[in-house]
Image 1 (cartoon, rainbow, N blue to C red):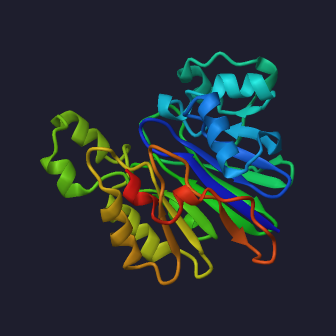
Image 2: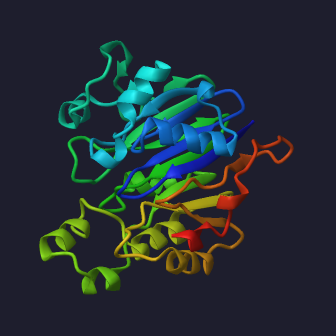
Length: 275
């Protein structure tokens, strides 16, 4: 069994990640519009009919903007904690709202999705591991510090979406006011390039095949900088920088003998140059 993964968008303007096998899929966060989600999935050859649920990491608008319409149109259950829902302002069909408990797997078709807590300035933030027959993909974004929850789960992943939000020097010299710089690097904000690199170098498993660097700052980072930094330490792992403007390619995680869905060749390995 294999998993197919793609970033539909990644950044402060919207986050949405697709993880699925040949029969079932989930979206982690839905921060772009329903229409744009549909367009990007269609370009990638991915079907909304395979999506079984949406999992929400936290209530910030760039993670929930498309949830209401997507859920209503496709009758998709939304897995969201009570605290996150209360702070989100979302108006959802109560029959489609489901909660999750950290470290207790939720089954969505053949996929098992497990949440765990993280440091971020939100009401009740979580990251996720999606598993299918021992193949694991992690979504690790909007993290202020690399706690043991993050590093231990990262060390289990065949592929991961890992936040590399800002370059320290660019943030220092940039136009952001002091309070915002303090929030970003304050332990409940975002991971810097160097923090993400430390996780990658010291905690990746030997079998990791793909790393999608995610949630890059528009003002305090550069895709080509991040790609070069991580590529120096890749040791055969494919490094992709997820775009804030378009979908990534679809990446095939697992047994090579299974055929992958059609790939958007326009958004392939060199997509970092498109920012």
